[in-house]
Image 1 (cartoon, rainbow, N blue to C red):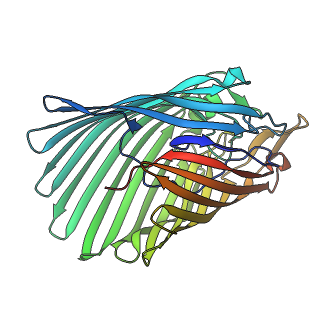
Image 2 (spheres, rainbow, N blue to C red; image 1 turned 90 degrees about the horizontal axis):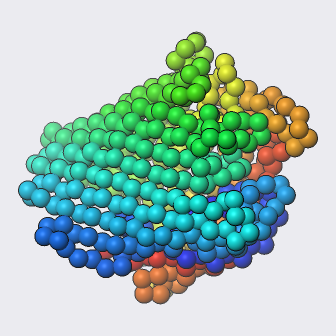
Image 3 (cartoon, rainbow, N blue to C red; image 1 turned 60 degrees about the vertical axis):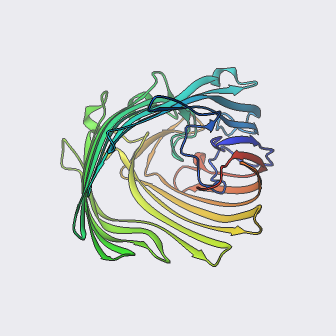
Length: 417
């Protein structure tokens, strides 16, 4: 099933054999820093005001319910936004970004609703020191992951702070975040109470040391702690600690690679798992026309199906490769693929298609291949794309899916400054 989340105007005509999957079409051009398309800009003294409007999608979707019995519908989303920027006292800046979108479904009226997001961030930059703190808010109605084949309505609020300090060739960075996610009441999927399993309070802190080896490279040392509480299921509360090292480069290989160990354990009880982790995001510019990007990440995510007495998480491993080709100044193409492997950290409970309750480990593999051919039209980009996704589940055939998507997409895509 496809996620309708492109920034801009999408007209999608699907040829599909899917049973509900999320596809990953080719990445659009570098996104605008505003909450949508700027409609204009004016100042009130030092305050810069930017009204925006975002058209999220205009599409034909052959499976809006993410179900094995597919429902085709016309889907649209759009809404206004407002961005504010207030610099003051040379080193300070206060920014606000906000937007709202209405999700419209022509036939499935029960899916219609408003979503939106907002953030307020205060920045301070001195000689060798950078500080920022902010508040964020999101209202979502989408599929949270490959694990759940249904749209979930949820609200997320968070407060965060970050400080960086340059100490010669050494840079110290400390971050902290507290967030609350609440899934709306009454949401269930295959026997799982999503209102309970996807509602969390999260505390996250980490520290990173970067030592500059050359003007183009730095060594990294990192450590972090995360604690997750479930307001309505305290027996599932867990924590994670991680420590690792890596390299950051801005040369031919532009990006960052880190590796280390991560320990996940219940706060009450002796159940725990310790395993290695690896995160990599690298980009290479191959001449003037070719750009290659590789991504790999394995992390722990909250599972909607975890049972009491087990770790309420699953291991999420994703490998992706994209090749972007600039054919001419106006035409470009992207070819890519993703492999995702999700493994539950304990036995889960699922209600199958037959209505029976089954218990087993979750072990799913997803393959996604995609291609995108686009033409730039002033500040927009018109693209034709095709994407094929297949997913198999080792123990639960009910989660097996495959499908083909093809269509057109028109995106707001200003040129990089």
